[in-house]
Every structure is written in C-alpha cells, then in structure tokens.
Length: 341
Image 1 (tube, rainbow, N blue to C red):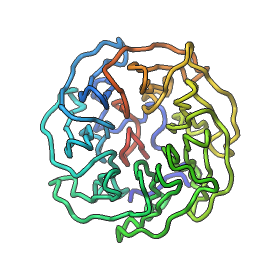
Image 2: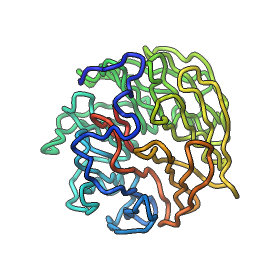
Image 3: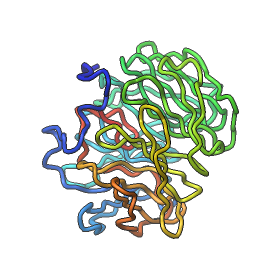
C-alpha cells in the first residue's frame, strides 16, 4: 500500500483542502442515498439546492468513493447491484451486478473491492476495474457484518458484526478470517456499528448502538481495552480534518459527541435543536462542516465543526443513509462514505 508519511497520523494526507489532482475540479456536491425511496439525491454543498435525482428502484445503503476517487458507487444490497456516479459531473451512469453490497471497501493497495454482504454473512472480493468476482470469504460467526477499517500496515481489516456483538479480523492478503473478538458486553440487536482507526494506529474505536458508546480495541485487534460512553445509539465515526477530534453520531439521541482522537476523552457534546437522528456522512473538504444524514427524519444536517452549531437542515427523500461528499482530501479511498488516507 502507499507509504504512511507520518506514523503518528495515518490521515496526514487527508487534511483540510489537501485535494489530489484527481478531484480538484469536481463540483462540491453531497450524494444522499435513500434506504426507503431507492434513489440518490445530488445536492450542491454551497446552495443546498438539489441538482439531480437518480432513481435506482431498490434499497440503497451507502455512496462509496472509489479507490482513486474518480467514481462513486451507490450500493443496493437487496438489488444486488451498484450504481456508478461520476463525481466530476454529478451524473449517474450504469448499474453493475454485485452480490449483496450493503457496504463496500477497497484494499489499501487498490487491488480489490470488497462487497460487505451483510445478509449473506460474507465478504465478496472483486476486481474493481472489471467487476469480476475473485473469491468469497465466509464469516459465519459475524451476523450483521457491515463496517470496516484497515490496520496501519494494510495487512489486516477489522469488520464489525452488528448482530453478533463482536468483530471479525481478516487477513487482507489471504482473504481468510484470522479471529473473532467479542465485545466485553455482547449486544446482538444493534451492537457494533462503525469503526475507525486512531490516527496513530494504537487502537480502533467501535461504535456500539445498544451500548450507547464506543469500545476501544487495541491496534493489534486482539483485545478490547475499555469503553467510552457517548450517547444513546452511538453509530457513525468521523475525524476532523486535522485528525485531532473524533465525531460520534448518537443516532437515537439527536446529538454528536466530540472526542480527543488519541486519548478518547470526551471533550463536548453537540445537541441538534429539536432532536434528530444523525447517522452517516463526512466532513467537508475544508474541514469546517460536518454533514450527516437524518436517518429517521428525512433530512440532512449540516453542522459547524468549530462549535456544533446547526447551519442547515435540508429536506431529502425517504430514509437517507450513508451519504458522501465530494471532493474530499486524501491520496486514496478505502471506501465506506469516504475513508481516505
């Protein structure tokens, strides 16, 4: 995988306005997939105007930037397909058959796209250029496999198992499951959700909705170190563009917890006026705004990353989920809604 320029901050090349030549001219759009209405809305980040709607006709989960950031993929798990979206124009193109893509990730060397097949309890590895299936990793002990992040050296990936109360550690080279690691308290209804590697790689933060906070898994992905309470329905994890803060969306509480990304100390909590259901999104390219979908309220929230002030509440379609922003800083994308390094 590309060399890590700063071992103390693996996100050092994804700082504010550090746009690669691939994306510098892309329009500043937000891409909102809808779980219920089955379409993607393209929204201008500056005017908040909806510029396009792309119907897919089946349940959509996430919009995922490709490894080289030149394409977006809207994942439709029940439709067994992904929709291509060109971020240079904001236009939607062809659909590609993919097995049960609840979510999607790319290996740190860019060789494989991984369809996270939640319902099938498996990971399906594809050539991201031809979309030919290479092989499949079955994870029978990982009910609800859905989110992932990669180790500093890119050799292992850790996938959360929402309905099993654990994570699965996968060898990226062999595509084999190395081990399952249980959370100290196993929640199996809405358990482990999003996962994020700390900037210095010493730990993974794992949001657990039923536990109302984060489990801290050590960097070797062998044991859980501690628990950090954040709020009811802890779900999505996003780093500030300087990598110093970790934003945690508490989906069932209508709040965002702000943590020190290294120590895990809770610095403050921002509450959305009138409540809400902040879910998935990303931080703007300049680092000034946090955009997240309101999963159960059919809106998108735009908050100031300086003080948590609600800047906008944009009405959208039915069931907004894993929205993405483009352009975003970074050399390459590992997938989800825009994990870049």
